[in-house]
Image 1 (cartoon, one colour):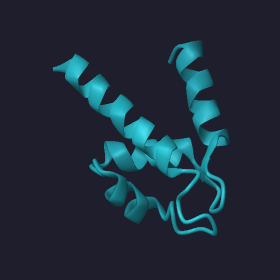
Image 2 (cartoon, rainbow, N blue to C red):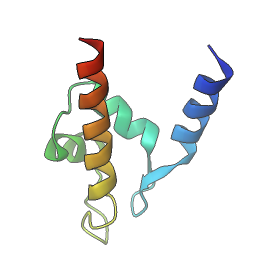
Image 3 (tube, one colour):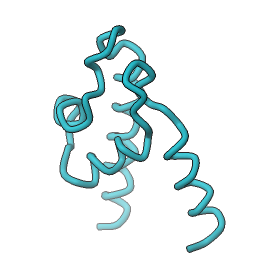
Length: 77
């Protein structure tokens, strides 16, 4: 594993996408890789969006992760 990939993994584990529930970017990515391909599926798989802000802070971040995953998948095909 390259140093850059390792750094990204560490950052993903430390970066909280859902602040209310303390859900990391790594957890979100794992859900997306596991087949959660919509906002609702990611929220159901991770519990994001069920905190005190009702997804107001994390929804845009989850949508960005979903867009990035779709773009990366298209590049691989």
